[in-house]
Image (cartoon, rainbow, N blue to C red; front, side, top):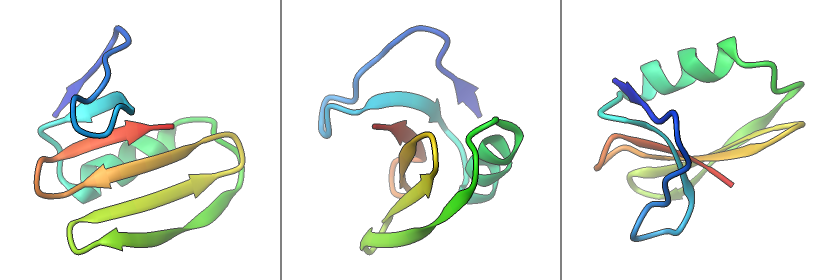
Length: 71
């Protein structure tokens, strides 16, 4: 798992890159450690793409590419 320490945008979605080369479980564990407020839920956007929402921020996890992105 690699964490981006500088602001990088995904070329396909235009969203901010948070993690790469990570599994869904690793992405969830990372988000759990952050102070993001109340968990609001998860929604499947496509077969390999999930939207994860918290009070302070929303995220998109792309399983096919192993990316966690924020918007």
